[in-house]
Image 1 (tube, rainbow, N blue to C red):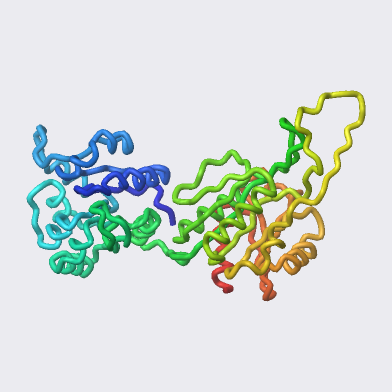
Image 2: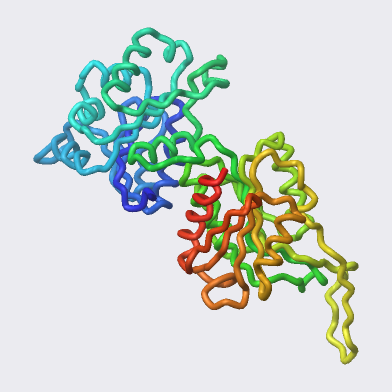
Length: 400
C-alpha cells in the first residue's frame, strides 16, 4: 500500500527544527499526496508562510479568526477532511496542550476537534522532554491512540547533548505509514540495491554499455523503502528520477560500482541486511581507453577487451545479510542461473530473459523465476516491475 492520493494536514509549531517539515512535505508531494500546512504564531518566528505555501501550492492556515464570514470554523472544517494529521515538529507546549484538552488557538482547537490518525514528531530541549509534565502528556496521548515518536539523541540547538532532536526523516515517514497500518516488515533493516547499466569508455565520447533501464532495481529500492527499510541505491546511468527517502549514489563504470558497494559495506560495518544486485554490470571493459576521440577512417578498428570486475564474487563472504543476485539470460536460463548463484555465493537468484517480449531490458513489465540456495523456487507471472519487486521481496522474507 502506498501513500498516493492521501490528504495530510501538517501542523508546524515553534521550534528551530521547523524547517525540517519542508523535507517531509517534499517527499509527500512526490508521493502525489495533498498537503495543507497549519502554523502556530511561534512557528512563524522560525520560518515564513511563503515557504510552505510554495511547497504545498496551498494557502497556509495561521489565524483562528481570519477576515472571512466563517472565520476559524472554515479552517477546522477543511482539517476534518484530511486523512491524517502530522505535527512536525511537536513542541512540549503543544504536547501538553493537546493532552490537557486546551483549545486556545487555531492549532490546539483543530487538534482537539479532529479525530483522524495523528502523529507527533517531537523536538525540544532534552530537559523539556524529560520534564514530568511532558512525560505525562506523551503517555496520555499514546493511551488515546496517538502516535508520538521518540526524539533522537544528539547535539541540540541549545548546544547541549541529549534526547530532543527531531526524529530522522525515515523514522517520520515510517511513522506516517504506520498511521495507515501499512506493513513494515523491513523496518530498521538496511538494504543496498544496485541498478541500471554501467558504461565502459572507448574514448572521451564513446562507450560500451547495455540496454538496462534501471526500472527493476529502482522498483526493488522503492518497495524496500515502503516496507520500512533504510535503503541505499547505487545507480548506473539511467533516465529515472531519484526515489524519495533513499540515499542515491550515482556511478558510471563497473569499477565505480565496485568501489561504491565496497564503501557502503565498510561504512555500515558489513551490517547490510539485504543486498539486491540488480544492476546489469558490464562483463568487459577496454584494456586501453583512448584519451582523444578516435577519428573515422577506412581502416578496421580493433578493440581489446578485458574482464570487468566481478562485483558479487569479490564481496562474497563480506556480507552478514542475504544476497539476492539477478541473472539475465537468453538460453538455458535455469542452468546458468543456478550455477551463478552457487559460484557467486548468493542466497537467492532472480532469473529473467532478455529475448522474451515484455520482460528484461527496456520494459515496464517483467517475468521472473526466483531460486533460493535451499532449493525453493517460485515463478512470477508477467506483471509490472513494481509488483514483481514486491513479490520478490516477500518471497525472500518468507524464506529466511
